[in-house]
Length: 414
Image (cartoon, rainbow, N blue to C red):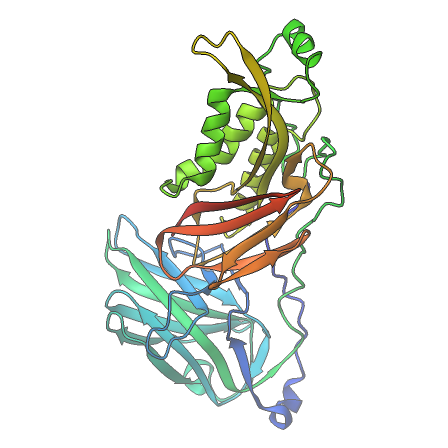
């Protein structure tokens, strides 16, 4: 890949001297309010990677955001993994490890510490389903009375039955007596916004190295030249195709899959009816690249696809369609490259790279997020929270050149 959206974590902290520990013993919060971290893939047996800033509502003392794991396996197994959280490594001696935990199924939860000394003893708790626990573990029970540098925290659900969908929540992880070195999580790699004219049809390949082939043109070369002599339009569609585009943009009953495919289909109808090549950025290529970008973040972050194209369509003035006139129209629409979202939040990027247009101006984008309309500025991002799983709407308003479109996209929140 030429560029990665995924957020990486690199252990770059330095460990403070153990001899000075007693003079700087403080409460150190490792996870609170949705800080990102890292879960080691090697040795992980959870069925899915964690969601770092989940929001499934308040559940007793558990308030969003929090870490969430969900999944199911076809055989009974222990689910375990090692976390590297903010401010790690930390040096601890005495005090307590505190955290909140909740699970959707009754079971045994375990937690332990790890560092150069290896893995500590584990502390186990029997949890009832759908009950939030605020737990405290004396550090001495885990690593003894001498100072230890903690590089990882192990968590696990044990003896999870087969074919049982289970969700685990963890929040507010802290030590009551610790010192922290440098922040362990490296700076986030910024999304690679493009600085280009939206009208420029050239795209260098941001997430896919191999260019996507153009859609085959509907018109022969001779017919393209003949029609082009009678109009200034770059694209000429049939009236039926025009009506299909109009109908899609006003529908509020779409499935997530149809919502996703609609952007591709509509832009395909426009692009295939081109009279000239290299007028707009290849919408098929943008769609595939946006899908790759979404996949790189496990469908938690996605660029917004936008089509803003002037075209004409053939309107029949008689039943046999012998008398035809060309009518000017415009498609202004948004789309997302995935029908599903992994987790209770979706970060949407407004990158000019993902606009296919024959107009010079970037459309204004507004998204109804967190119970209010918010403007998504070009080369910026917006976080959309979902209150529950299942099919969820995302309301978007596009405006440019006197045209205003209110559109509802649908995704399945998993």
